[in-house]
Amino acid sequence: MLKKYCIEYSVRFQKHLPTERHQYFTDDPVAGEDFVQDLLERGMGLHAIKHEGVDLPKVDFDRFVKIAASKVTSRLICKSLNIKSDEERFRFGFAA
Image (cartoon, rainbow, N blue to C red; front, side, top):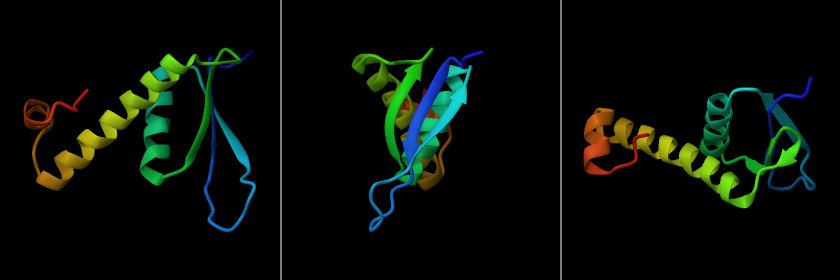
């Protein structure tokens, strides 16, 4: 059975091109968002997000990445400023 979500990514090496693409499969959209968060934090290449074998429309792809990026930003602000997520949400508005 086909997994609902497939995330295509690559590890970016400076001197080794072309990069090899990898795939992460999950049925859970939240697990997919968590995986995209990890990719963003590590500076890995994000090439495509597919739902049931079809590329997400640009709007949905952008929303998926935006949610993951706001969670990463929130976590970094909380860690750097040593504040709780409630205060971060009130002051900066990133917490999801």
